[in-house]
Length: 174
Image 1: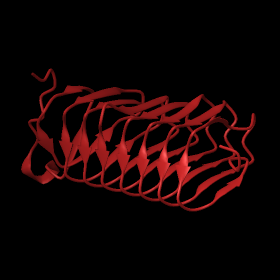
Image 2 (image 1 turned 180 degrees about the vertical axis):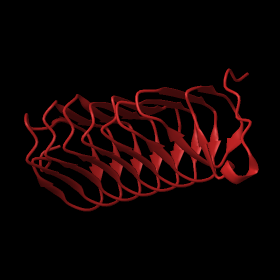
Image 3 (image 1 turned 180 degrees about the horizontal axis):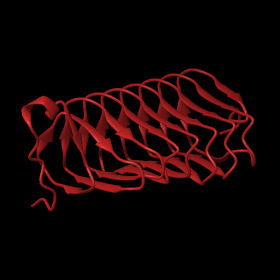
């Protein structure tokens, strides 16, 4: 059951705005506007999700064929067996939790100020964390590419990550 109406003119059908809750339906590209909150429960997104400044995305059991891109977001949560066909990129935002998610591309955290958590994910590409300063926990992930961490303050914590590529710099012991 959805508390958000997605009625849009045909010209706008390729990008829908989410400010509320969307259930188990299929949508095209999705945008979370500045300062708004979008909750996705079992939703299928045939394109990308763009999260704007100070917006919040809570995505549970979602299937996204493209990327999740967030810049200056307030909070990003992707969890509960979600599947992302592309990358998850979070830049210059605040808190982010990516847990129990399959990512066919990369997971990238860059220049974030809040607490970042990456736990129990299957990542086919790289996990990269650069210049974050709110704390970073990387725990029990399977990474088919490299685990790369540079210039994070404090240094990332975690462990039990299975990495096929290299564990580099601050993540060399994780």
